Image (cartoon, rainbow, N blue to C red):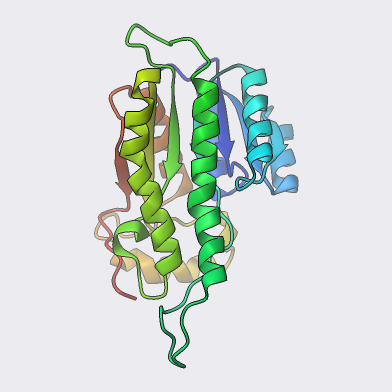
Length: 255
């Protein structure tokens, strides 16, 4: 698929992974809509890159619907990328004091990191299905979601997050099969440890801790590497129903 000239929606587009993706897709010629709750950053990207910013709550149907509509209004909507973040609870399933992990925190984490991804996936796919085929094989577009290697090697205290990300990974093949008659691909990226600007000065400490644990290259990932993979997933028509780990061969230890 050709990115140039098409419309792309990046949910979480003002965050570390999202901003890198917005810049990459914009440089490739896409008309990009940034969907996020970070107004200052989103508006700054709008002014700098000529993209469109729409304040968007990924957990809300009407809010995501408005962002999707903006993407449709901006051009031929073929690409949706979801890399939004949000609050996540954690802790051992049964604490040292004998109390169970809170149910409310688990529900919030699943709502943000799984249900919201489903929300973006379904509404984006509905809109992409309304476009005409981009080529002879009937391809209309692609939705890229974001899981985590925690889906496979969740650490102690990560149960809610690992469960949510595991759900994102599990949705990928089923969604690809569901949407195949419509010519819509679904692919997922499962990053390892990625050093984003959000960490600030704490990033140096994280790099010192995680870097030596990555087999090769011995460092944390970079948002630009995530964005480069997203571009390839968008352009390669034969990548479908797959979760791609982006982790330098890292496997999370128990803690």
